Image (spheres, rainbow, N blue to C red):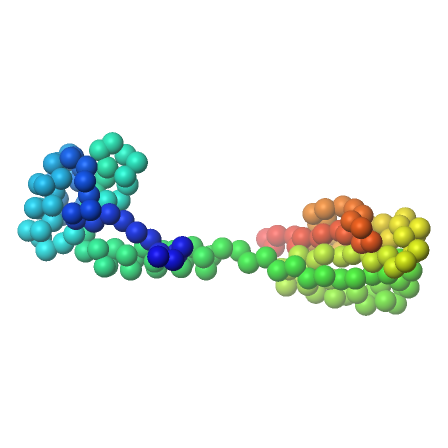
Length: 173
């Protein structure tokens, strides 16, 4: 059984002595499991346990295959509506000149307008780590120039040989 398979106890798998019956084509209430099974059989449907945590457990008389199909459809819809977060990276050196900075800023702005997050980082090679203030100034300047399209999610922080800052797109009105 895969992790995305949904399973419910149906018909003879329900061992509780009493169940609460809900649904469209039945009198709602608490019935013995045998009575509920008989009612489901008379209608040519299945008795499906919806919630086992309730006391007594909640069951419904429905077509099990159709019910599973609808559950999978709901699951797919939930996944489709889930926000997909894309993170684009932009790399700077501690001594990045103005032209390169403008070029990379233009790309960062385009990424933010598309709705992607931007992970801007300054990579320090060798002994250039002594210029970490320059790296921080560079990242803060980028954040300031992009504040009309994005907001800083995490301020510049040094992780090993990288100083990283994350900028998230602003919500569109």
